[in-house]
Length: 294
Image (cartoon, rainbow, N blue to C red; front, side, top):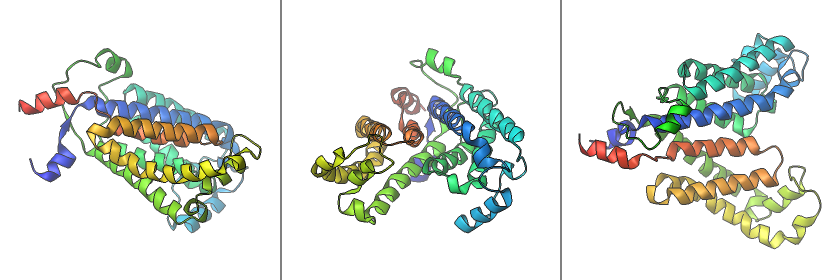
């Protein structure tokens, strides 16, 4: 097997795609539920901006053309119906029934939100949209419902196998997200000087009010640089099988800390933690046995 085939087309257990599909389905579900109370303010024609203004704003921000359901469905009732359909589709996606259609609905509604309200778009919006696009063209392990997956978790999977390209694309995306983040932070004065975490905790983004971070400033300086090292290390540790557990613990610990210390960052943390599912392979022993017999 050549290097290209080994990297992109190697056969893997379809349950790996199933757990990734379920994880992102629940992430879409959480995201749409979180967004639901703000739907009129952000998406309707009586909200923060008219669709025509949003289209101009999107073009100025990205240089692209706004493609959004909410450029056409603009009333409160229409937007409510679209989001309810998206919430139902996310649950269908998690179950596996009509998975490809359900994923397209989730992806297109998410894309429509980003294009209709670019000013309110957060970091996890873009990340979730990118991951959703990758999954659209990937196997989904749709024959595995959460219940069947639970019942047959320790069973051997013989046929059929799926090519691994979809999971590899997500893994590469994880690399890009973490390393690009570090590069950006190194160009920021507060991160470069070791003061970013202290200022973050003192800002309106910090969950716990008061001047207490000043007393811990020296410690936070060290944690500032440690955070950069951890962000560089996480995708590498996840990629290498022998260090994968360490990468998982570091990544989950980092994002739980962000959620605890920061306000409105839980969905960002959940998005990044969900991406780790693309690295998880509980059935590697079985896969090796099957592949060695071919």
